[in-house]
Image (cartoon, rainbow, N blue to C red; front, top):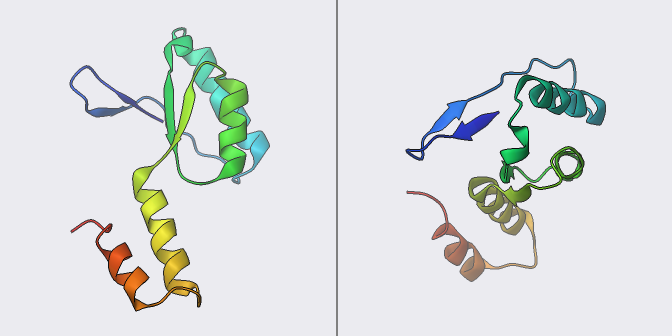
Length: 102
């Protein structure tokens, strides 16, 4: 887990080594974070990739926080989806390529 400091820089606040990426393991990591950080109620925004299971668990564990999708992962997903789809042509691929970081 990474938190943003007063200068807008990400600072690691927890590392978790988990046996497998399951709902139960994710929930336990969040429970540990909450036990170790008495100010966890101040968490207002959580940024995640597109894993909907993660989002559901985060919403349950941090009900006051707003869950946002990571910009990088959304653009990557869009690019892969359009590239693999047969219903989009060259024009759509050209437009989508302008969204990729340079």
